[in-house]
Image (tube, rainbow, N blue to C red):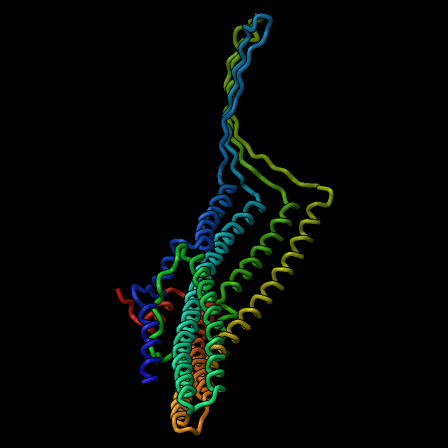
Length: 433
């Protein structure tokens, strides 16, 4: 009877949570539309894509049109009207070419940062989602535990009144009941905090969330070789790719700085028109047009040491970028190892907790029977109840942590996508509308 009551309470709590529930993929889609961090990354990508256009512009012709109009003389009767059209086409500008190559790397860097932002959003949404489920589970288990302790308290009071139990049983049950009330208050607050974190990402108060199916089976990473994942992380992690681009950019910076020693050559073509009229001196009144085309070159001789200084600075920044790349590789490898071990140990913990749940349930049943026949005391039953609910709570948390580590593992190797959320989504109980 008591087991049926506890199971009904937990099932009722979970069913209430699933009423009109949204699943993980739906929550992620809400975040795509409303998360300001992701929106900022999307606009940053749009801005970054313009870098190649601007870099290429330095290699293309520059056309300008200008002129002036003025009046002069004692009666302001002399009118001067000049205008010119000029085209400048760089022919040999090594610095401009390096700048153009850098601009293409800048676009690639923007794309990498956006891809990283997409992965980060998946992780942030998933973490907030599972943190909310964890808080819900803790509260649901505490509420079920409170009901069980309340039943035990009522039984202890009845037995004391008829003289079959001491006041100690009643006091122990009352102490346990008061403690679970305090824990319930804290769990309610933790659930509200978790929901607020999720709300910050999706932009609105979250609906009840779909929960994991009872007895769900989690799968191990494939391939089941940690070094394979580590090797992939060292090459494919977006942090590593971003630092590799930074190193390549630094190399172009060195070439661009050294180009300060090289000559520059431009093709210049122009058409100029000058018109002066109204002058009191007849031969000052002219109207003429001049066309010209030629090559303009400049050889830098001395710039106060600025060019050499820029080269040394660029070389130092290249060394820095190389060190940053090595750090990114090590960090990616560490993250991959931690995530892989997290999944492996999580699966082992889940299996152990599943066995512990069965043992805890058997222990509770035995203690209840022993209490009824007088070989166990009330505190034994209360401790067995506490052990059972703690095991169920830890089992649920282990499953959530294992799923999160599986996502972090794929993020470490740069392969985390929405499809991975869909694979987790099939493990969730279907939403009830």
